[in-house]
Image 1 (tube, rainbow, N blue to C red):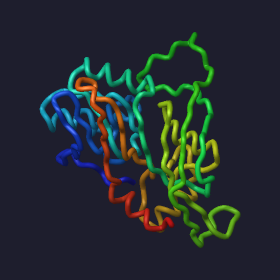
Image 2: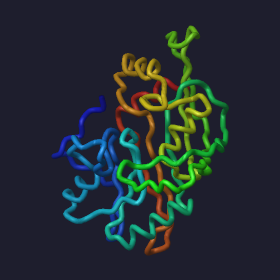
Image 3: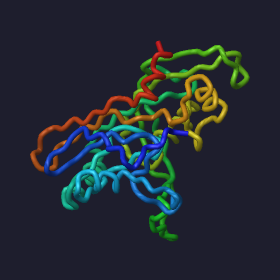
Amino acid sequence: MVEPFLNHEKLPVIYRDEYLIAIHKPAGLLVHRTVLDRHETRFAVQMLRDQIGQHVHPVHRLDRGTSGVLLFALDRDIGRVLSAQFEAQQVDKTYLAVVRGHPSESGRIDHPLTREYDDYEFRNPQASGEAQSAVTHYRRLGTCELPYAVDRYPTSRYALLELKPETGRRHQLRRHLKHIANPIIGDATYGKGRHNRLFQQLYGCHRLLLACTEIRLVHPVSGEALILAAPLADDFASILSIFS
């Protein structure tokens, strides 16, 4: 399992002004409380509120297993402006991921995805079940081949990818990488258990190898370009040495 993030630990702040605050969310931390995780007592929203002494409003999502840049507004009006930027695809997001296999050097995944709801969201029984457009661009940064037979081949291949989603569908990157048969390592839902276990045994890696490393947007008040970046967490960065 991912090393627990204790209540007394502070969330790393990578940017703050009077309108916005961005943190480096650790893997394994929920953004907010959900019905399906009633037993959990740690949430980024609550922890950050307690840490800075004021309410915060998340404007986008990161899966529990994903680490990296997580942006909050410090009031509801700013939050609505920022959320609109994300919904209008005016925010550039960059992720790094370790995946199974050797995909092509670059590519565009244009694969519509059916709507996935949070457990607390209202589901209109009359709503269309049609898939929504979803596009992800990727670039291969490195590859490796390990001398371990996991599937039917004598060795196992992996790649380090840079991912840039155009759209923001729920679990989009994880579902898109599964769609092209290059699932993300550590993904218990869309990935391959045998490959996940190999990384656990070889590298002590018990997390999803997906991180949001950079967000670029227009500041909702000043109008200036804003670049928010977070380094890879140590447990992710330690894996990079295997790639060439």
